[in-house]
Image 1: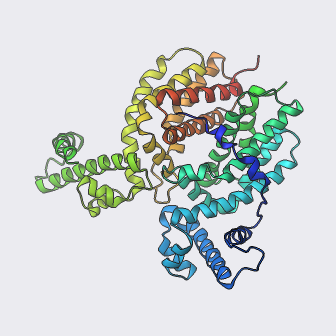
Image 2: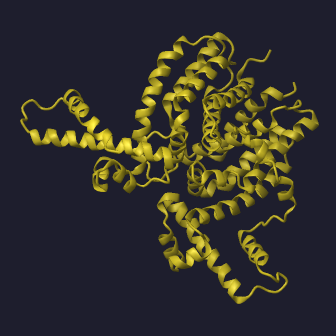
Image 3: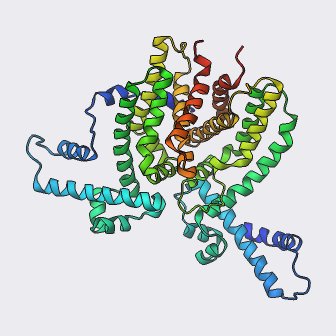
Length: 242
Length: 231
């Protein structure tokens, strides 16, 4: 009845890793449209291109409004108006507001995963690699904290929270944290960890919880980094070899 | 959903009579009555909101539904509360008052190592709140809501719980099982993050209080490795 989601969280990751990772949001849409069409070799039809442009316009407007008014405050009607189209046109592309928001979040998280992976590649140890993961995240959202705030609001909601939290990109982010722990064990920096799933989840939660300081108290990147460093040390203390 | 108002009304009459030092010189009965009615409406709204947040979550509940459920007009909800976030704050404040009064009473008498005291504290918490995990999640989600007034107390900034945790750790420093070099606020933050996560598990996986406590115990042990003095 009560399963540890950390275990589920890593399922299907290998499959996910093998896929091409879109680096730009627009590429993702192209990929989807091509996948949906029967003959992906052909150039997209005019109709498909128009649809793609509509989607991109809606997503841009939605991103802006969610940032300005929060998830609750932004309505489909406002988003349609900001995109210069009818609400019907919005609904032709997205089932509802949560669908629209999820699309934005998932696109961002794929890009975030890429930024984190790059940052962690320069890590000199597991501890340092983890810190780089944290900081890469804070840097990524530094200029779009209102959107992060909206994401937390949705992430904690009983309706949309589970879907967002268990989305494949979140699992990729989690796997990056696990990777650092595994690397630490392999290099001898950390001792064998029988709680790697729990530790991964706790590191990830500490990473997320610190956004509160950025959102509500205006902490700088440096302050967030110092805090994260201490937290990582506390969470690794039990398996640190010294 | 009519019982609560009938019950609430006489109670409010006595409450406002004692709590409100009504100007003795003012024989203004209508003003007093209006205040009483306002208090009754407020109680009805809070009661209705608690039920709806608990079953449908924060985002899934509208002010309009709260008004309908409470049997009052939308307008009268807004004369009492500025926003949905404010209604939720009031719901949580009333609930948590009881819990923290209990914890304030129990905490000074808890014995054993800091880890054990922390575990007991959270176990009490979960047994108190486990039936309302969705409400609690709504509380957390609301912290990120734009409409929340700055005076509201979202979960992350819940100073009462943080104070209890800090005192627990300070006691540990005095007794020698918490390393004095460790930043207590950072430990508190980690405990708060773990605590919130347990609620999410509970709400999404239907965990009961013992299951929540078991997961929290593991997380406390992991954090404790970071605050205990090194042998």
